[in-house]
Image (tube, rainbow over all chains, first blue to last red; front, side, top):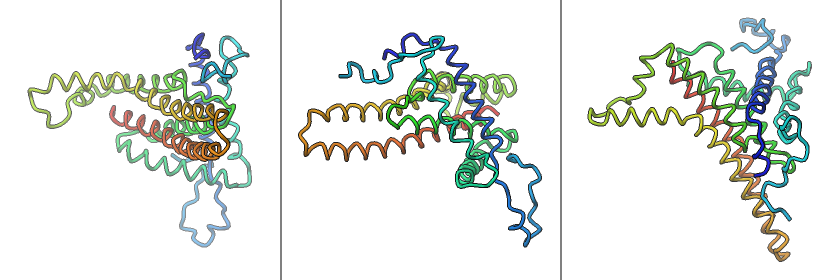
Length: 55
Length: 225
C-alpha cells in the first residue's frame, strides 16, 4: 500500500483526535426541542430547563 | 490498469506528509449541522432517537459505579466511526477507518486511559480481574498470564477488528469489480447483482462494526471501576 509508507503517525494521530473531539462537541449540543403547546394537557410532565442534552 | 488494489487512493497531494485522502475523515461532520436547525427536523429527531437508545444501553452496561456522563464519549465514538464507515462505501471516498492509523489512534488512548484509571484507583479490583471466578488452583498462574496478555492486546484487537472488517469488504468488491471487463455480457448482470448484494452487506457491516467498537470500549471501561 503506497499510501501507508511515509506516514507521519504522530501528526495524523493529533489530526484524528481533533476530529474526534469535534464530533464530541457536535453531539454534545444536539438536543430535541420540546414543543410546549403539545405538553400543555398534562402539566405534570417536567419540562427540561436545560436545552442541551441531559446525561 | 490498476497495479495495486489500493492505487485509487495514491496520494498525489499532501500537506506535511499527511495526504489529502485523510480529509475524508471530516466528511461526517458535514451531516451534523442539520441537527442545529432551529425548527426540528427529521434528521435531528432520528439522530437523537439513535443516540438516546445507545445512551440507555451503554448506561446499563457501565453499571452503577460509572460517572454520570461517561456514555457520551462512546456515543461520539460510535458516530465518528459510523460516518467514516458509511461514507467509505461510496466510490472515490477514502475509507480512513480501513487503516490502522486511525483505529489505533482512537483505541490506544482509550485503553491506556482505562488502564491508568483502573490500576491507580482500583488496584485490587484490577488484580481480581486477572483470575476469573471458579478457576481451579492449578490453573491460576496460567489464567493470570492469559488474562494479562488479553488485556494488553486489547487496543490492537479493537483496532484490527475494525480495520480488517472494512478492508475485507472493500477488497471483495474491488476484486469482483475488476473482473468485469473480461466477462461476457450476460454474466455482467449477475456480477452487478452480486455487487449490489455486497454493497448492502457492506453498509450493514459498517453500522455493525461501529456499534461493536463502541460497545466493546464500553465494556472495557466498565471493567476498570
